Length: 145
Image 1 (cartoon, helix red, strand yellow):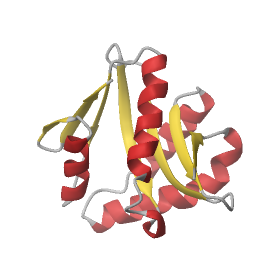
Image 2 (cartoon, rainbow, N blue to C red):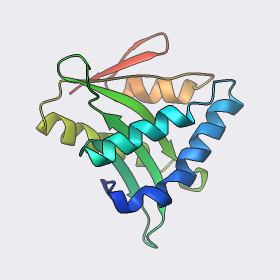
Image 3 (cartoon, helix red, strand yellow):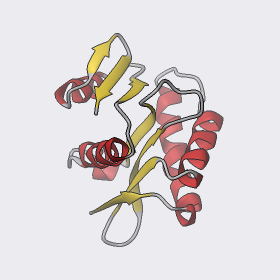
Image 4 (cartoon, rainbow, N blue to C red):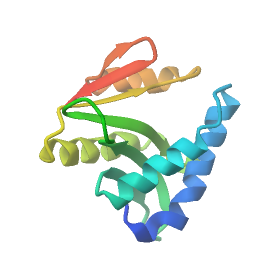
């Protein structure tokens, strides 16, 4: 499995994963954030932010992490906009590997922490955040880099 930064050429291949991510979020009762995520990913890819993908041996994208240092963010802050792994590739450590890649990349660029949220009944997401060193306050998470 190849973990790497997304490129502009990944755009069309990435959207089915984004759609599935949003569909799962909506199924948990969360609002449809597809427009916000699309804009964030587009911004991230075009500005060299940590939009990280997992690509299988056949060249198919099977997961993504979307982290970006957006304009007007706090000094050293990177916003975690989403992590997703296709169901057929879950429980293989891909989300952890993609986040580690993103952490290293962001740290090298001067970031100090990643902030985000885990919503819905996502106990697994909160547990994973805690295991990987995040401070968890309700649904808000912050990973020091």
